[in-house]
Image (cartoon, helix red, strand yellow):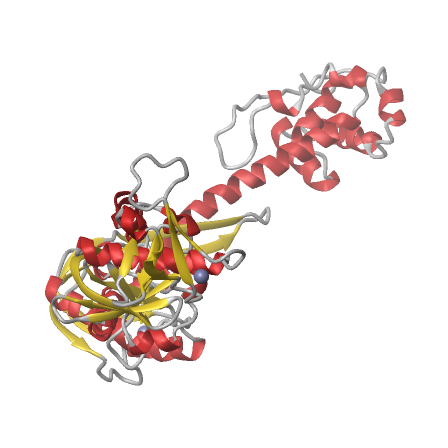
Length: 499
Ligand SMILES: [Zn+2]
Ligand SMILES: [Zn+2]
């Protein structure tokens, strides 16, 4: 090793500082660790073959001796050098907000360069360092910094810094090399406790509280109360709020079972507010915020009640009381925001957004619903008429499909006929043909299971004999036998009764 203790003065000695006269036992040095006298080998010899060093009595040197010597050498260097670079101290503050979430913040003491006045070993791994400004701290010289972090008992009493100095090679190093190593080692030192820890802890906690305040998570009995309070503050400052659409919807079911709806709306708008009050009784409710709205057509002037939903949805029982108030009541639901929200985010949500807003009740909604119902009844009537027509056409088509193919050539398919119902239809006038009835198609009528075709033909013959008009005969026959007029026209034509 290159470092030892002077047996007379107790001062550290570096082998390179000895003169040749101090070779061997004449060095008057002992080992820091075991206290045994040491021999100086090759001291003061500039032409050495073996590197000069302190040597233990044969077989006595242990690893422990090397490590302790290394530590002493390191401190010796710090004292000689005078300057020691102390790392920054970081202290964490953590508080639990109203939401249950934690808010963390850090306070810092900056890194500083200090001057070492003296040091004194307390044991093999710890020394008390006194700085030239009078401050003292404990320097723990450890193999590994990490392991020391948990052991805080002694560290709390005295400011303590941990440095990883356990490399026996340090004990062999000359001062210059040692200086470089110490610089590197001290850069990686860690504070276990610091002179300013109490102040730093207070500062960190204040910062954490501030953070919680910024996150609207601190400053009232509970979060709900806090957010109501801040919503009111925001509306008071901004004196405006964006309202969502107010929509009245009417619903009905068409003849074919399809639902049909119609709506009338007041479009959403930014409206001006005049007075903003916090939680005042209104009827049987106590809305979170009450404000007075200025007119902004079509929105009428008057009071507006605002409910801020922070955690629980509004119950049906509460909804009933809100309806009884018969006043515009707006909900701002901020549940989707979760625990943390900044004041500016919250302000945007309360004032500008419509995303979390809905009307719990608005007296005008009933009026809008009535207007929608009028529109809806017109639309429904039209749609139902279309449904009727489609059904009639389908029935016609079904009947047509039952007709034998040979007759389908004579009777036009329903799609080619004019539509029935309320729409104007192209009238085609038929006239009686006087002559014998053609029985050419009788077999087909019979084969298709049409049981009344003979009755229908006989009926036509009778009407022809009575000189009734074909149009009236067709209508009466259709009513009596349930055949459509166009089908009857087809049958009568094929029998040669009309033309
Ligand atoms: Zn020793
Ligand atoms: Zn609320």
